[in-house]
Image (cartoon, rainbow, N blue to C red):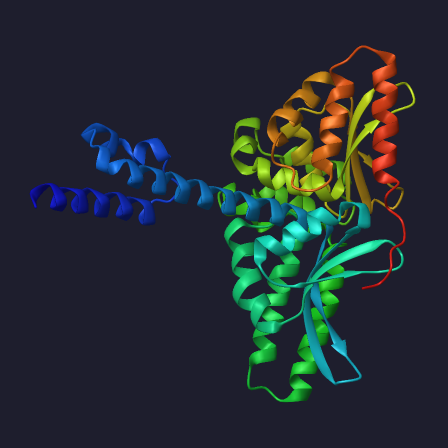
Length: 360
C-alpha cells in the first residue's frame, strides 16, 4: 500500500509540474522518476515524454502557421451588399504546387475550408465569426504577428466588437466602413510599419528620436534599419519555426544560371520586418526596394548567411519547400557541375507543377 501511494504522489507531482510549466525540458520533469529507479514508473515516463513532445510539436506548428499567415495571409472584413451584412475572414492563398502547406495550416487550427481554383491557386479560408473570434485570434495574440498584419488584427478585433454591439445598423455601417478604410491604409502607413511586438519587446515605447523621425513626411525607407534590435535580441525575438513559416510563403531557394545557390525573400509594405530578418541572418547585401517603395526583398549567396539559415529552418519546413530545401542543400554541398545542374532542373520541375486545376 505504501509503494502504491508513493507512485500516486510522485505521479501527481509530475503531472502538476507538467500542466503548470509545459515549457520545462522533459529531462527536468522526469528527473525524480529516474532518481527513484522504480520499474513501475517506466510507463509514466513514456506517457510524459509523449505528452511533452506532442505539446511542443503543436506549439511549433502554431508558430509556423503564424509565420505563414504573416507571409501569405489576409486578415480583414468586407460588406456583403447582397445580404446587407459584414463578412469577416482570415485566409491564406498559395500556388497549387504548395498545397501541402495549405492542408497543414488547416490541420494546425482544425477549422476552415480549402478551395482550389482554375488559376492554379489553393486557399484556406475561415469565415465563421465564432471560429475567428474564439480560435484564430487567440492563437494570433499568443504567438504574435511580427509585421504590419498585427495592425490588421487590431482593426478586425475592434470591428468584431462593433459588429456584436447593440448599436443601430446605420451606426455599425459607418464605423465598420471607417475601420475598413483604416485596414486598407495600414500597409501604406509608415508609422504602422512596425508591429507592436517589436515595441513591446524593446521596452514598450519608441525612443523620442524614433517617433520624431517616423512622423516626418520626408523620411526615407532606409531609416528603418537604424532601429533594428541588436543581434542578441533578434536571436530571442525571431523564432525559427515562425521564420520557417514566413519563408514557406515568401522565400525562395534558387540556383542561378551560374549554378550558385541563392536564397531570396521579399514582401510588400513590411520593410522594418525585412531589415530585422536581414540582420538576424547576417545578410550583408543591401535590401532592394521597388520604385514606389511598396516591395522589399533580400537576396544572398554568402556561405555564412546560408549556413545560418539552413541551421535555423532545417526540419521546420512543413510544405513542399522542405523538399526544395533538401535539393537546394544538395547543390550547395557538391562541387560537381552535373549534380548542380540536376538540382536546378529538379527545382524547376517541382515548381512547374503549379498548373491550373479543376475547381472542387
